Length: 506
Image (cartoon, rainbow, N blue to C red):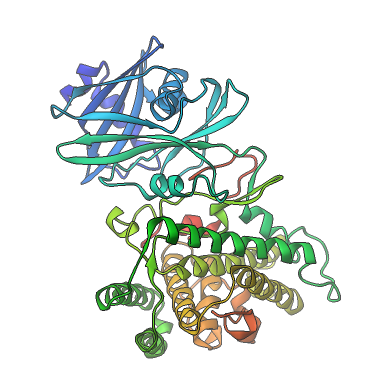
């Protein structure tokens, strides 16, 4: 890697550093392109495009005496990243390695304020974010997209589309890389909504027993304020879909589009059955539900969030809910993430997120009481938690608004599809959590979850309540039918489990 020496560091130093990064998939790195980021700082700052094992990465670095360090962790690098996205300071990107004509282009929405201080967020798996205190007393967050994917990143595009709608943090700017006829978004800057916490933390705090208090069978599982809050979350989701349909347009769900989606559903069902053989007797029932979608008129397809769950929404003081991270499932090809889809896919994602909130609470209760698995939680506790889940789903669907009969059927299918995806992931990665998606699958198929054999060692959760009706029924009883973007400070953030699941097989 003579390119490394040209830039002022050893190839071995870059390999060592990359090997410790969660977003790096491994392999021998090769610097394909490098851009010097010149500005009012003394240090050498470079934006590298590094390939390894068939994947290309965005690797901005600052060269120090000890070798390359992450630009997101160094003051000069942090300034360069903000300047590249928002024009907060003068920055010139000069190609020094790679194809002639390759360039970085800044696309600020308006001249941004300079940074007063900054810090990198920890705990991210797919990307890297830096929070800034700005000279105009506002705050911003810059996210580096670690995987370099040619094409328009949906997080940049869709956040820009919705920026003035009040549903998302405002887009402040972004930057793109262009080379040999290809263009890719490499980073994005948005307003940082101070004091926020994600909806996962807000909503899980509402689950009975989440605060460690004693269960009161006479206490409602949901207060009016909590119900109204979740209804507003449903209303936000509807507004996002309406805005995206109006601003990005819609397309007919023609035979080719329907066939493409059904192939994806069948593939996920195959993966789930392979890992959870107890599903095999119900495969015909799954296929029949999928086939029923051919007998109804589908709504138009449109741009959607694509990876919607409680961890992708912020609870903002004085403002309410705001959605974020429109990148979609990061490990899916960009070409798939930008295709029009069914809006109720986002609704299904949130329905399953309520299932995870309930299931995680039940698991924690079992562990807190030193009981070997969640099935040992007293039945009344499990029933109250399941009742909360059902009430939360109903409130969300009321807030979202009326669904046609076709949309109700499609929502059932997409809840099942999401739960099967989760089931395959948990069976392979976290068998103790298998009971959570198992309940979602059983509810849609109208079977007792215990009739679906679990791999050895798998735990149980809400799905283990003996009566499958205790699991939320996403049909008429649920009101209608039936895993940063911006990140928040580490002390405020609690990653939702379905967000981690999104890093599993897609």
